[in-house]
Image (cartoon, rainbow, N blue to C red; front, side):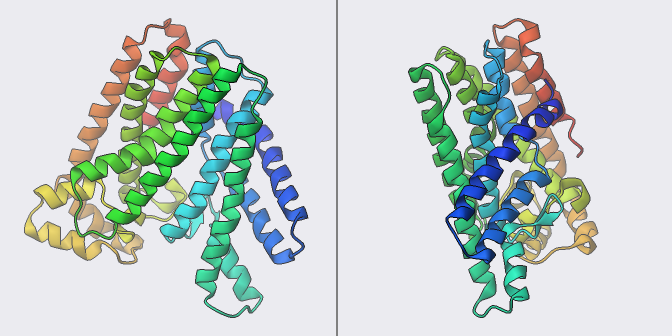
Amino acid sequence: MTIQAFKQRFDPILFPLAEARVKQYNQRCSDVFVRHSNEHMLTLIKSGGKRIRPYIACTIYEMLGGRITKPVMELFSALELFHVFALIHDDIIDHGMERHGVPTLHRFIHKSLETHARVGDLAHIASGQAMLLGDVLHAAANYLMMRGIKADANRLRRLRAEFDAMVEEVLLGEALDVDTATRRTASSELIEQKMYLKTASYTFIRPMKMGAALAGASKSFEGFCEVFGAALGLAFQIQDDLLDLTASTQMIHKTIFSDLQERQHTVFTQHIFEHGTKTEQTELQALMGIALTEAHRPRVEKLFQDSGAVIHGRARLSVHFDEAERALAELQLPMARKQTLRDLLKYIRDRSL
């Protein structure tokens, strides 16, 4: 099943689950403003998203002999609800304005507060409200994970352990992300660890291991998850960082140049700090931490092209994609059962750059 076909099958299961949880939360609160803000989370969920984490979990589960049923999809909906929770917090941290063409939750609440002529530090209050409301999706994800499905108890324990590890790792990765943004420079080792925790493990390794756990896979299969997931995940993050520098808002459906504006250290900025000229390093420091628009594009592209950062990043992409290809080729399973992962690898490799 392609990721696009999965999304078409998965969303009609995800949306009612999210609606039911929001309806339950709203029944416990009489405040119309909070309820209206809560409902905007449904707009965010329905506005877009690749559903890559539940797709990967279901793909591995099916590849190892499991059958993708509605209860299985409901279980792995926990991954998507947790992801939206994480995005809500991430948008606050990164001052994100919109996602998939709709206002981020904190921006939506801020506008609503202004419309109602509320008093106080409305931007700060909106961020606090969004954090708290986003937490209800974390609670919803935990509810689905604890509810589980009819399956072997040991398999469910393994699956929940992987989910818990995923939560811990992505939060630690986000903490590293925030911390490195306060530094004028960061080490390559710290950037690699951040990419591993925030993306490789969160998006690929742990969802793969969750699918494997539910299928009752042997521990040895986890080695493949770690090698393939790390390679594909690091490539995915580097690709995202490149798109942030080169793509338009219409292409990526979120704020452009967000990494530079939030002083995020990536393999591209690191290349300039380690190998760029003094002039290029000074120019990079001047661009980091300021509001950037399309008008800055020629300046940004010239810096990252002339310094060799883009060439370096593309070379890293090729290395990681090749590592993933090798891991998949060496996996001792019939080719037909590996085809979905081959298609996923191609889908990610072919993303517009």
